[in-house]
Image (cartoon, rainbow, N blue to C red; front, top):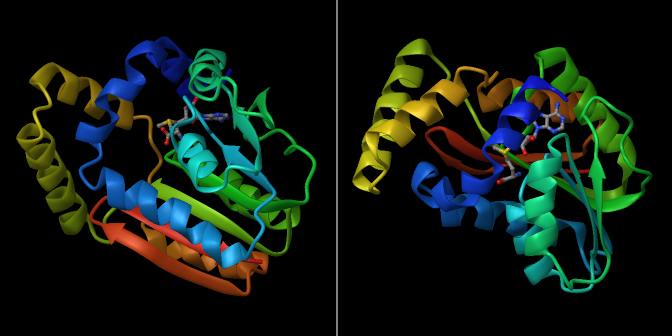
Length: 224
Ligand SMILES: C[S@@+](CC[C@H](N)C(=O)[O-])C[C@H]1O[C@@H](n2cnc3c(N)ncnc32)[C@H](O)[C@@H]1O
């Protein structure tokens, strides 16, 4: 199991409770990620969620596209167990315990979604994954990439982290939870959104846009 996935497996039970407070633009961030699927046109029949975790984003996609088949991939079995509970009784859902470096489940997909997971990979692996996502999509299919991003300069990165801490405190996050989150983020490999948008275009996506940005949180969208 990759390091990040092992860490999430250990925290699976408490993961969901802290999400809203630790992601200050929670509704707008996930809302933009789901809204991006409209670019794929209707119907959205098959959706792949990479680094699906407890199924937070998949649950929202399932609500917006009740007939879509969902394939959730994650390297942490304990996180996928939570996703199974969240999506219990919902037909057309499958779960794949796998590393994001492994071959992707067979396409084509109408949409690939991913939230806050790809930043755990090394940059060359991220870039190769973007190419593999392009290959897994049908023409016209959408990649909706909700991600934590780095500030474009060291000064902005410092300001965004300071503001994130202040916003979390204002949302009621306790100091020990904040410390734990910062310790987990030490394993993250965040990049500014600019180079990542460039990778999407270089992979062959015809339409690439930054659909949402609020300091450390961005949604990149790309249409094959
Ligand atoms: C911050 S969570 C995000 C979960 C979910 N997408 C969400 O928005 O709540 C990151 C997830 O990525 C998974 N992950 C990290 N590195 C991975 C890898 N190399 N292969 C597979 N999953 C990985 C972790 O296990 C974890 O469930």
